[in-house]
Image (cartoon, rainbow, N blue to C red):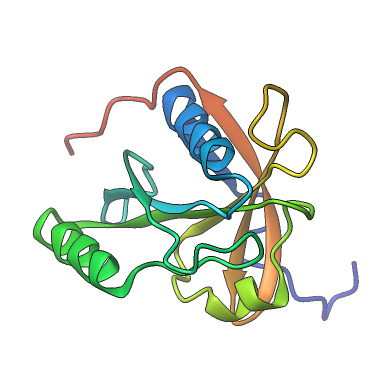
Length: 160
């Protein structure tokens, strides 16, 4: 890499998810197939801890596009604000394409601190079978893939 190369601040970062959260996101994606599923995993502000899964309704009801219901999203942000939380993960599914952000997804990515998770259900739909589960950071239109580490439980929160 040359001296002038720019390295994303998120290169080498990892999304750490509890197995139960991972399983719930996958189940939501499969359940909503053939439409795209969407949701948010909130966590304590500044912690990068994905703790509280909130399944959202895809207001677009579409197999190729997702849209959070604006009143549901406003209510969720009020809850997160009251609980000193922020969106740690913003997720949605792709039903016919790979788990990579589309141009539309990139344009809609407005949470620079969030992990953007995509789940592709194209191979098995809502039937048993594996899905493609990938995570990205999307900042100012730049997409950086990151590793996903699924753990039994997140470590206990630090009290200091």
